[in-house]
Image 1 (cartoon, helix red, strand yellow):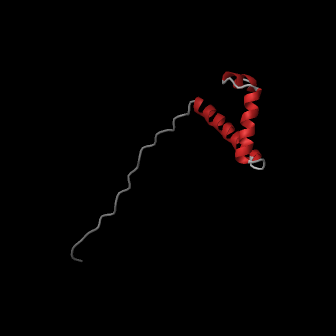
Image 2 (tube, one colour):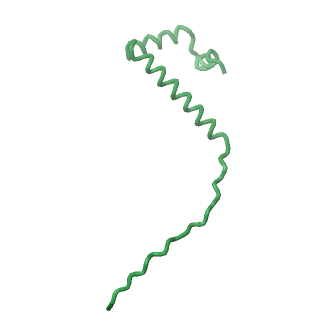
Image 3 (cartoon, one colour):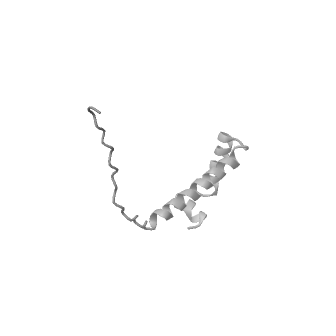
Length: 79
């Protein structure tokens, strides 16, 4: 899916995108926008990576029997 079809699916054309960018510029300022875009890009990349990992079946780990340690016996009484 290309970015133009993504925006078209939500009914966003060029005028709407410009208005959104102007609002973001007013809210966050010019110096914060690159960091905000970088964080958003990293979040999307991580989300895609984790959703791709979830699609693959995970191999089940081999079940190992639990070994219970015996507790030492304490003797009370006369020596």
